[in-house]
Structure formats: structure tokens, C-alpha cells
Amino acid sequence: MAGKDRSLMSAQHSTQPTFTLGLDLTTLGAKSPAHRRATAVSGERVVISDVVEYFALAREAGVDLVTIGESFRLDDAPRNDAWLDPAVISSRLAAAGVLDGGPRVVPALPAGLLDPVRLARAVLGIHARSGGRAGWQVPSNPTAGGVHAEVLRVWGAAEDGLVQGRKPLLVTAPAEAEAAVVAGRYSDVVRLRVTSIEEAIARRTAIRTAAAEAGRNPNDVRVLVDAVTVIANDEASALFRADLIRDVGTHAGLEPLTIAGTPSGVADEFEEWFVSGAVDGIVVLPGSLPADVHALATQLAPELRERGLLAPSQVPARPESADRFASVLFS
Image (cartoon, rainbow, N blue to C red):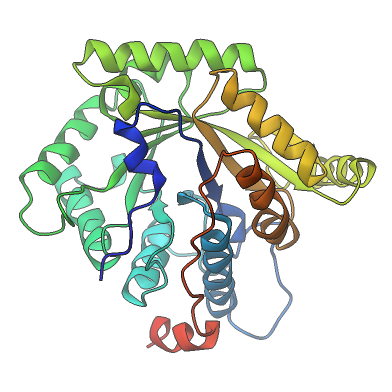
């Protein structure tokens, strides 16, 4: 059954600015140094049960979309098809009903490893099973317009897979400056990896201009900035933990924006990025699992609601238990 549509797509045709909240759970994967486990239990089972819990927390927080990047792995075994793991976990979550009434799930699938028509149909399948709560994340590539166009053509012609006329989300991440034209022309959501408001404003302006030149409403493209988010009860503790996370290399090689502080202080920074016109929202890259996802749901989200950035909480009933869904996921 299709759940109630969240703010992400309804915001596209609104005249009022609407804040979009994303959550990236790529580091939840079995190979992530942030979440490696020494246990006799298979990595796949442990990771999936964690993902179920984190999706429940995302629902509580009012998250609009959860992205699962290319490096996500279900287990640490070497496999030629491991690049499919983001789609596999998304499909299992959709089939088990974990996504009902919650955020959209957006797995990454590299466009170069799968025929665009097969890719489009695979994402449509997840979209249909999830009640219209899925999407596809593609790496930024200034030459990928042909793949995007073919995928959108298949989605547009599809009779099966669309839910209440809604196609899957097309997310570009991260969008480099030279890819702005492609992102603006095709994407519903564009992720930025920048560290200054000024740079974000310039990038967002280029993306919106490209959208307008392609005959689209620029408001149909949501531009979000990636932010490693560290939340603690006092600022000193948050900054100390942020330094440790940087040293450990949880998000090594990404060099994203880092926002660390108390729930109120983090909300201040989120609000500044939004009201300045730099972005339409934030994709939270949790500094620590599970601490910062729990803090997002229980401390940061209420702050954002008080400021009018998130809608009043209308949290659907949480899944009965992770065990209930695990029986479906592993069957």
C-alpha cells in the first residue's frame, strides 16, 4: 500500500521554500571501517537488522530520502556482483514493508555496469514494491546525459511500476561544477559536496539555470549539501568527536562539510545554509553510528520542527520489531 507522500516531491510545486532532509546510510555497510563487526553472525544478517532500525529512526526524524551509496556492502565476501548490494537491500526493505509511510530509499547503481533499460526497469521494480518510495542515485558525470535520458524515457513510457503517476527519484551525487548542466536538465535531487555557502550558492544557481534552459521549473530540482553531522550535549564534546571521526577516516576521501555541535547549534547551521538560498536542504552523513542517527531523530529533528523547517511530526507507527522484518528479509 502506498504511504503518504512526504514533503520532497510536494515541495516541487509549492510557492513556499521547503526544507528537504536526507540521510546517507552508506557507512552502515559491512565493509565500512565505521561499522566493521567482529562476530560469528554473518555480516549480511547484522547489517540488515541495523538498516531496519535506522529506517525506523529516519521515519521518526521526518527524513525525506535515504541514500545508499555504491560502496555499501551486505557482507565482506569478495563477489563480482557486490556493486548490486545497494539495490538488493533496497528491494528487500521494500518487499518487507519497511518503507511504508517513511522516507524514499535511493540506492546507487553505476550507470556504466548495466544497460540503461535494464537499470530503469530494476529501479521501477523497487519503486512499485515500495509503494512509490524509491529512486536511483547516479554519480555525477558531465557525459551521462544520454543514460539519464534513456532511463527517464523508460520510466515515462512505463505502464507498470509508477505509483499514483509518480516516477522514481533521480538523484545525482555529488554534482561537480562541470556536471551542473546534466544535473539540472534531468535530476530531481542534486547533492553537493562543498564547504562554503558562497560556493553552494554559485553551484545551485548554475543547476537551476540549466533546469530553466531545459524547459523545466527550477523548483523541480532540489539541491542538497552533504554534511557530516556530529551531535552532542555540549559543543566541545561534539568538536572532539568530529576530530576523532576525521582521524579515523569514516568518510575518507570525501572531504565533505562537517557540522558539529549541540542539537540547537547544528540546527542553527542547517537553518543558515537553507535561508541563505545556498541549498534546499541537507543530506546528513552521520559521524557515528548509531549515536548521530539517534540524535537526529530525538534531538535535532524537534529543533528543526520548532523553527518551521520540518513539518509537525506525523510519525507512522514503528515497525513491530526488527525481528519481524528479518524473517521476511532472510526468507
